[in-house]
Image: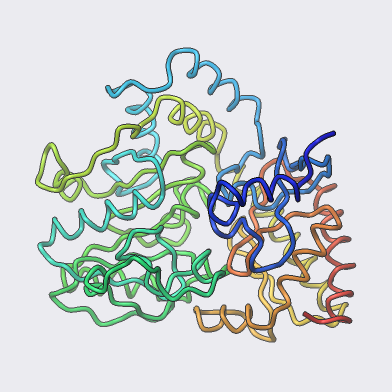
Length: 424
């Protein structure tokens, strides 16, 4: 007999802390047992019990083409047959770096790493090294990975679990971190090395930048000589061909990329202006290294994905998101449920309350309603998978079409009625 989700979770709890390898997967915020994915294809995943779900998690945005796209899997097969890791440069590292720089105006050099956390950590170290300053400005509800200095007031899994910071992080690790509200530009001084920001916040639900916010940050960083870092681990190559900086028309000094750029494999990157990037070893004094950086299998997947993403791809994704967002909002209204469905390009969010969310305080108020959990569980029963935490977003892929949209809206309509009637 095939293993059940419950049985697998019980086995996992014995050998993996919390039964999961990333905390939000444990379903602590929504209740119930995690579903264990057996296979994914296109817009769908199937769990180990054979249930099929329309998948809007899509590896938290990494799978922009949908799961197991033929051209990506073939590129990976070819790369694996040639060797999985060498500890020496390969041609595909150069090709991927060239592709990133060609897509992102102002990004002149990149360094490949293995995770978004690593990219953000290295970008901050580079900014400190380049400026000779210590202070880092972050925004409440943003998430830049689990490096010590960047965990203060974080969104995503930290917010889902209700953790203001992590145990094991000494006070002096965050003594140079200043947390400010999203969508408010702080006044900086000569102590600030960098400001790191999600240009579109996607770890406290989906929160768009207010008009003038990013422009003011750019101006303030330029004025005081601080480095502006856009964390585009979520938005990079997801919201536009060149990411959020091209979509929104504001250019940072450094970027962090992940998820899409690795084609669903562990790969990320940070990059930016040449004079800053040349501060990295071996050219400069800022050290960063990684045995698996630029992994030949991951670069093959990333190149395959990016080769299939053109302007028409983003128009298709954004059109789907707009149609789905409008239909979900209408279904919620008809059910008598106060739900906001923000849409930015191909990204969708869900928040609860009469007004859109503009900052972390608003995201926390939405989560405090307790309505996300029954909504998520209800959709899962209807065959629609969204992330098991109220601070995440929905990621349609290019494999999602009209049939998936229609089924999602019908499921949402039924679940919204039940949630409105029963409450949290």
